[in-house]
Length: 153
Ligand SMILES: [Zn+2]
Ligand SMILES: [Zn+2]
Ligand SMILES: [Zn+2]
Image (cartoon, rainbow, N blue to C red; front, side):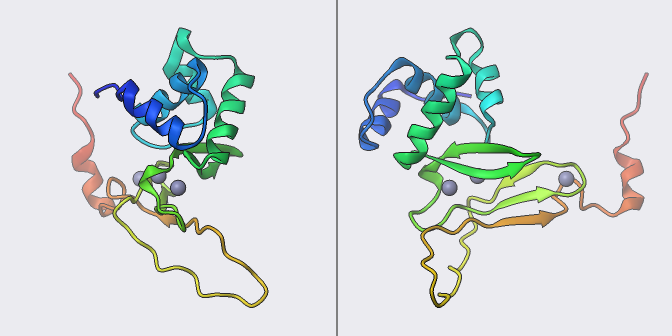
């Protein structure tokens, strides 16, 4: 996959009112290069030797969230998954679909959910929808799964 351009990263940082620093650049680069939402741990792994220390990655992500460059996409096994905010709108994140069988979570970037109706006394600032069920890879009827068993030898 192509490395996100440094110019794009600098522009994003500036649009969020953040100074361009090496940790911010590398962490944002890892987030943009990822195929989907990633944990702090996965960011560190993806960056390898280039990775800033844990505290710096944590603080960098916090700064990104405050600047609305990054969203917490979903929580799994008590760990947050982060993703760039540019595939979401101001009022809502694209929905995420977690498969109860294989455990994968997919971004449904094409899906627009209607906003929740107003509730008296509450102010909705952001909507985040998480769906659960069987993903396309797992929804095949059980009897056909024998076909998928890879032949060895
Ligand atoms: Zn979002
Ligand atoms: Zn699945
Ligand atoms: Zn997503």
